[in-house]
Image (tube, rainbow, N blue to C red; front, side, top):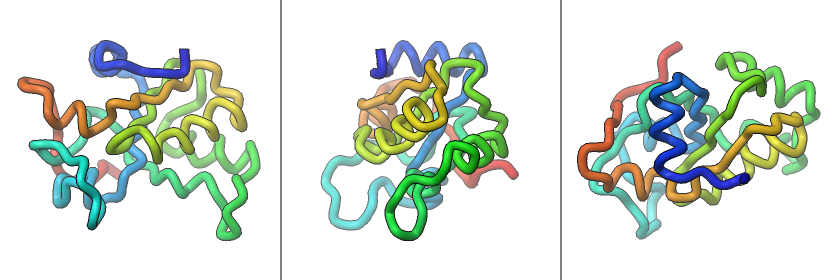
Amino acid sequence: SIRAYREDVENAIERGLPLVDVRSPEEFSGEVLAPPGLQETAQRGGHIPGASNISWAAVTNDDGRFKSREEIEELYAEEGIDGGETTVAYCRIGERSSVAWFALHELAGYDDAINYDGSWTEWGNLVGAPIEKGEADD
């Protein structure tokens, strides 16, 4: 399945599997809940524990076309993601992360890439769900 559910995210956290948060650094850190003008938000800001912050737009060139397979592989390899295990992409509502999923699954050939369509709007509203705040670790 290309779709990730809450249980898949919980499993990814437990197993230390790659989580890719494609939102802006301000959303990732918890500074803002959503981009300006958007209504769907969560009660809490931050990101899923262990997630890497790789912008959804990082997989495209300035002209809007997708980068090459090699460039996409290199981008994710910088965060230790090589397609060897399940990789969960998420954003705010699953829209931006679908671009990352397409790049991972269809262009880079990472067969176990999945998209968490509940994304931060679901996770940030779950009572007791773990979150982290602050910038991505370098």
